[in-house]
Length: 299
Ligand code: CP
Ligand code: NVA
Image (tube, rainbow, N blue to C red):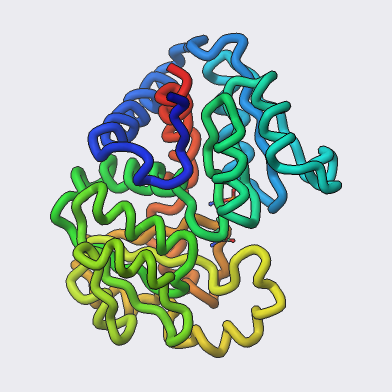
């Protein structure tokens, strides 16, 4: 059966951990100048209907480093963007390439694409989840602090795609997730119900950060929500991760953000650019984590 990576829970906990360990090994090999051609003659199609810096650069570079090729397909250029059915696009593109990565607005479209694809599908961010980012985040935590099992993580801000994937990661990697969102911005109830044993819904950001090992946030307005920016700035004003909030966490706690970030909104400049921040390593690790994912799916 074709393996897909649409949500973290598509893979067993052991397979996820194996990908993280492999990513750390691949990073060391790359830094040591070792060359690998494991994916020689393999092509990854990358379909984007939203902007991207990290996801595009990391997948494209990752395929190059593994000896393969990546094909950037903007919805503005391919017939999918002009209304060709997702099902037809999936059959045709998957008949020519070895793996397909999609960043599209609707999570349901990724599932439909996977149903009609003959090759592995990777979710590179949907309105529901962002599993590739969590591979990099879990790798980054492990590199800096060792296993995240038994630790406590605070999610501050929007109960969005990143928050949902942190809820899945809490189960898969064995940590507790404290979640603080403004009223009306909670994660989807289906996620709350499914991951209830691994999360605490907190009354405010301060209590969510109390004694935690890792603090994570994301933009207040995600891609596609730009029209709500002003309203969200007001609704989220008590949810900025600043020095004061970080001081509630353990003294050796670290900070992560998937980026792009808005300094002065969801995070203060002194936190994201400060000593506790792991954001640059986290961004770089997208490359190594996704190389490990590609090898897992195509290996
Ligand atoms: N974190 C992340 O997915 O970044 P991009 O939107 O730049 O790909
Ligand atoms: N929640 C953000 C994540 C960007 C990587 C968005 O969906 O725009």
